[in-house]
Image 1 (spheres, rainbow, N blue to C red):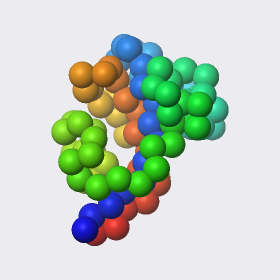
Image 2 (cartoon, one colour; image 1 turned 180 degrees about the vertical axis):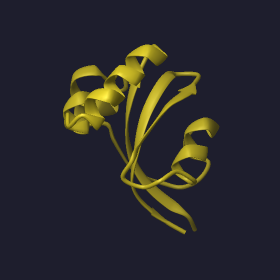
Image 3 (tube, rainbow, N blue to C red; image 1 turned 30 degrees about the horizontal axis):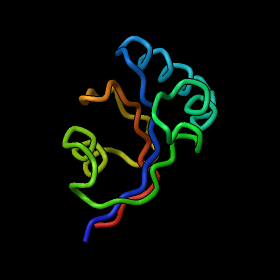
Image 4 (spheres, helix red, strand yellow; image 1 turned 45 degrees about the vertical axis):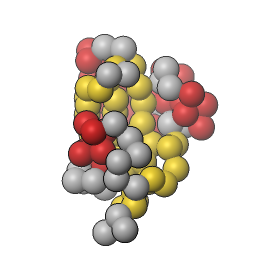
Length: 93
């Protein structure tokens, strides 16, 4: 069974999402940015969502996590919750 582990940052606007992505690419720590800006309760843990299987997250999120490049900051990804930056930390097929 496929499994993935990821962390994310959830914000309300695409603009803020892109701004935070630029900061992380420029060297800011993903976990620190998550703690500071994420509106998701997981932000307190640096955005860590732990391990999950396909279908446990909303479709748009799942699609990115199970097809995107590992260890790269992906997004903005729009869901009904807002805009996400996602970093896949591991994935097994």
